[in-house]
Amino acid sequence: MSKLLKLITNNRKKSIILAASGVVLCAAVAGVLIHNNNNVKTEANKTVLTDGKKAETTTKTNEVASNKDKTQTETTTSKSEPQFVEQKFAGKTTEIVNFRDNPAETANVTKQLAKRTIVEVLGKQEVWYKVKYDSKEGWINSKYLIEYTADDKKADEEAARKQQEAAAAAQKSAEAAKAATNSNTSAKSTITTPATPAPEVKKGFKSPQLSNSSQVILITTSSMSSSYANIKFYQKSGEYWNLKTETNGRVGTSGLAYISNRMQSTNKTPAGVLGILSAFGVADNPGTKYSYANVTDDMYWDLNSGSATYNRLIHNNPGGDFEHLASYPTQYKYALVTDYNVNQTANKGGAIFVHINGSGGTAGCVSMPEAQMRELITWVDPGQNPKILIIPSSDLSKYWY
Image (cartoon, rainbow, N blue to C red; front, side, top):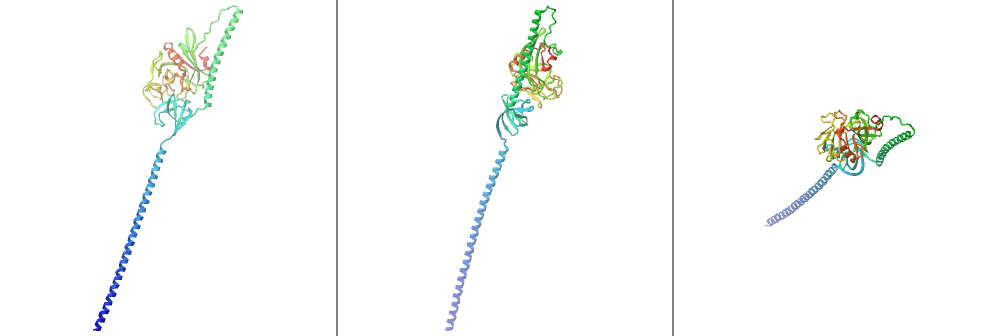
């Protein structure tokens, strides 16, 4: 009996130990599981935080890149827009130059300015000067324009003054010589016996080119290179030539060239005898006896050598080389058309007119003050075969006696 009780007691102890060991083992397993679960959550939280930071960093990087691209785009756009820089000075053209309505080689040409034309510079955009000429604004390529300095203006004024003084001195000398001749003749007549008078030499034009004319416009310069001229209107009455009007004017900026040698685009006025074909003007007909055309915006003078309408008035823009008459409202208020190169000889040029003064020398025409031009255009009469004689003063003896 005692053995049985001892056996039962020993078995119960083993059961208790096994049960306790199982409890401990379960607790250990549970602890391990809880620890591992916490580690998983921690890693997950770390992953979430890491991914969030990466996303935030990526977003900021994209924003910086976007702002950089935007800045570059704005900078590129800003650089592509040409800047206009305001400038104020007087300029002078160095060649015959196109006067355009916009700063581009493809822009419309509203007129052509002669070499040495004076303009008011308003500003610059890239290679283009914005200028004002004859009350109109336009654009000129900067490589054809230089500053017109105070010294340049002074030199031009001095040359004009000398020209006027020379003309006045020549006239005074001629009057003094005439007075001396009359005085000597009077003195001799008081002490000598009257004799048969010699035939009177009548002063006037002796050139055969002028023999059938009763009206002559005489234009003389001090030299072949001068652009300043003395202008006289002569009317023949019987056998005498009477001076009707005298004034000063301008010819080509490069002076004169004899008709036989004169070429296109040289800014030289043809020297010799010219006739008158017709008249035109921006203003209404002042009363000329010649056929008169009122200038309209579609009137052009074709200067394309070799063209069928070379040196002719046409009513459409021929392109190339031309004069748009309406672009010169001051000079062409009144104008006379000469017969220079009426036969359209290639490269001889054309559009040689007599018109009102502009701002300086001309591209080959003859100009004078408006009052004298109005007088001239209403005085000349095709029935009297008027001629225009353009010469340096050194040639006067060939045409006048």
